Length: 127
Image (cartoon, rainbow, N blue to C red; front, side, top):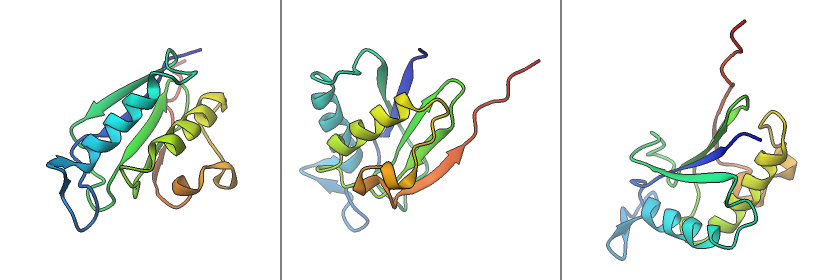
């Protein structure tokens, strides 16, 4: 199966009213929490967690995106950086298992039900 990527915006604010927490951005805290959990995660060899400088979800921090070849890319925001990592990895597992990258609303973890920012279709196959 193709390698999957979880993009994490490292520059996202901690919240809509607070840029930093303990001197670091919300994106930094979310990324660190994900990396800590990744060490024991059963899909750690199938996913690359990639820090990016910006996902342009600035009004909806924290922002992440799931992507893989031949799958719809899913982008989410409104993720509390200190609490969201377990739910993000749960959705990553659902995304991995989905043949097209679509994870139905009702099956997503609660924190990822309302924060969808984009569904980007896969590139068309060139014939």
